Length: 284
Length: 334
Image (cartoon, rainbow over all chains, first blue to last red; front, side, top):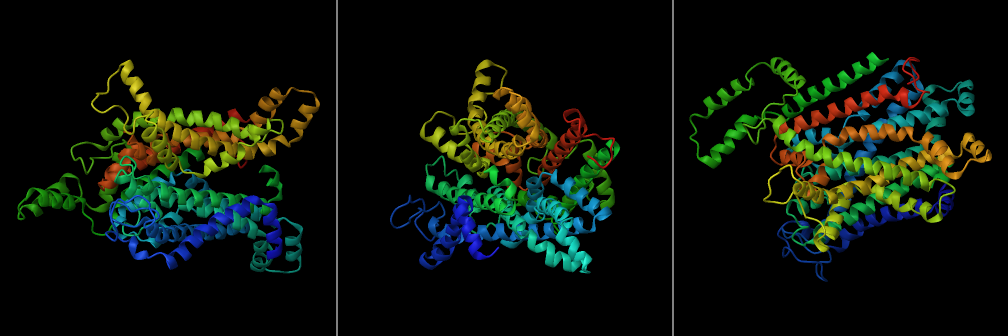
């Protein structure tokens, strides 16, 4: 699939188009924002606290005197970074295990499948809560991403294994094997290229669930305390009861960004899934 | 097969207990007793000389002076009896007591709203994929998908703002009106109901989205099955076709998921409870995190793993009853 083909398809799949548009907006917001907005204002005590949105502070300011526009300009990329980092690690582990399980088969497959099925029934968020609360002082953006990634590789493993199993039996893979290609060569040259659309769809889903887990941990107060991520902003807003005090801008703005992010990722995943799996085109 | 399944359940529970034992000891050199005494010293002006003796005395009392493997064995046997020890933040209270007080609130809220969300979401999801449904019903698919992408508590915040703060139709927080004491009376029951409506609405709305999306996916592939076409060609009426042929066959994965989410009832939607200051297990967990109350956190985590493990086990054993195609005797088939 080349770029032109992708564009032709995107025109026919409004989901993919709208979804990527929303994600692009979030990326640009961080990129362009940091060029226009003074990010020093994201630190506490840099503006008059408790101001509603006006011409000077577009998103208003919070209790500690942070300018919320600056906080979002710094925080949205941070949140995206945690989500994409955790999603990539999770998908990486999942792809590796899925390929091994699908190709080696036999006992190895049974073992990997057993672990995946067992871990899928474990309440991920709660395990993350107990891990994160034990290492709360040391938590940084990267550690946060790794903690979340440690429990986000099971779904990718499962879907990719299923896909590898179906690809392995196809004629072109058998042909390659008859031609004397080695297993590594078959994986790299025949299977992986055909797996790419699935990987892309799984990636969007993995990022979405990793972001959800991250935001939940942060909203519980288990995030990086000194970084103004979107989730931490929400945590401060909840713990200082912004809602009851009528400071709607303090919680509504992070929620707006989060909803844009989640809906965008969902639409992209659904669009890519249709691209990868024409069978489900009827589904939406 | 059943024995193997039971063995897997025990392994999960044992690993969960082990993780619970070792994770709090990860934070290198942390000593909860010394920290707690240090806090007391700072607030109460305790004198310095007695402190080492006190630390030693408390460590002996909690068995922390023994070698690690002895502590581990003691911990496992306590956990097996669901004894999670004392809360570190509210010392003389036992963890089990605190969880026990919060559990009925959470189960009451979650059980009802999960079931309502499941029924409505499944029906709606099935209808949006049904070719003969009215146009406006099929058009509900998009809002449904959007709802499923929004986390429960974010929806809760929005509802709280619109319906409680702006409209004033619902109370802003809590499980019952402040100043009243829990009692068995009609007025108290009504008060509790009034307080739980808004959190329940947040959960039901999001849950409709999640259940609906899952059901829609299943339904799309079911309606294109040959037996549905055959039943239609035989002249069966629409409702019969919908309920007995399409819906019923698409339902099985939904029941699996329902089982799992019923397991989650014991923790509740943690952040929904926090947002509404609802006195359930979720809020308890939040307070425990704020106070670094490890014993309470671990008790709740372990209880949830136990509940979910138990429910999955039960579902696996019940499966052959729901779907005759699945059997535990065929070995690898399950």
